[in-house]
Image (cartoon, rainbow, N blue to C red):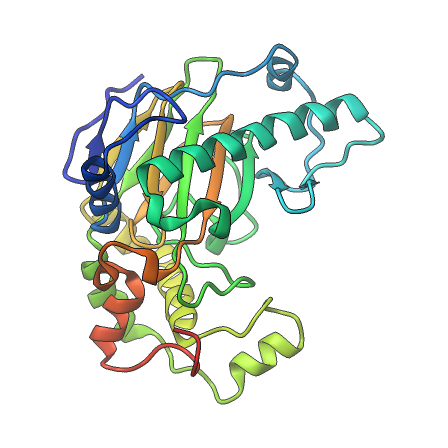
Length: 306
């Protein structure tokens, strides 16, 4: 296992409990680190599995895709896997992902109380498959390439994309990432290449259920930045980036819409997504929405959205 390379993108803390007691000053420091583009790295925060859950490491998981299993806390639905009437497997996965969702909410409420975890919770994911060597259906879905997160079917508008990851790999295998350049540099390079939004494009995408809600100009820009970053192989090779190994038993928190990142290898990962609103941030001016708006000198949202 390669050692973790310390760099300015990491904020390391010795926190080792999912429901910690944290002072308001420390919570402000956590939020400042996240909002300025750092990854909060918690090397001592592990997620312990129950006896039946250990069997998932050797189980034959019949995934509908080659990527992950998802859990929706609002309806207790597990997606991305065929159970074939395997009730035991379903209940084991449900227990695992429900607990991780609850533990992550406790952690976020302690570290970033103004984000209101219960109000902005998204999907929980279990990623059992190895990234390295996997052949995605297109370059857009190739997460081994540096990118910032943007979702083609789920516009976020004036919300952020915050993620908590935990490596539960039992084979002493790290989750290997690359961390790229500052978001302001990404914007300067790729935003001028974004094509204008077509008249009624957002309405068309929504009406024909290509998107779950109307895509704002911000989402339009971010999706193109995401795609252009991944398609530019020259950029991928020449951009300054740091290699980071997150070992088993560690947790990290990051705004993936702000931090340029790539996942190079690893399997057996838990992840929880949150969508905090810009208004709940400690410094909204650091958000990608505000940075893009400032760069373009224009509003990015439909009237009444932000």
